[in-house]
Image (cartoon, each protein chain N blue to C red):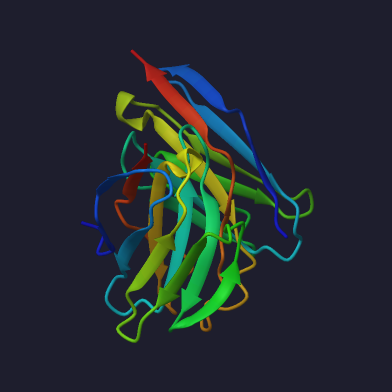
Length: 117
Length: 112
């Protein structure tokens, strides 16, 4: 089955700096890579995702890059703000097709991001 | 409100007992997924249902079982509870039109 590794486990940055979180996956059949943000005691929320036919995707201060050859993908947050402090999870899925429910996500172990003033 | 409803929000029970966690997916979503999140741990996949049928199984203990009903709500049954079963249990749902999951707010289970 799929195995997703995530680094670093904790990341502390100064407000305004950039933060980068990296993930690797094992199953070359995986083709969908979402990122979730989880604030303390809250549910994980999807913040950005990328399909394997795209190398990069950006949404305001957040971007995700994908290298299918190396089987790794990264989350980039620019101009970090205190409200970005949370645990971030990467995930991977075979995405065997939307219909029929072939979309089990395997999650990384999470990165605790702390943005300091 | 994400549209995925989980009840109860909190549950405290004794070792050896049995509990049922309930999840109602977003309207129109056919897939329901259950994940376990222990303290300071990641999201461990337990089981997935699609339109009433089991579709994928993860590291779910034999003491745990689940089902999805015709109205698409799902229940996760945990029996012979142990202290180590204390965790946040999340349900998520997805539709046939998108790969992304929407998570519910979770049920925090405490076994004492």
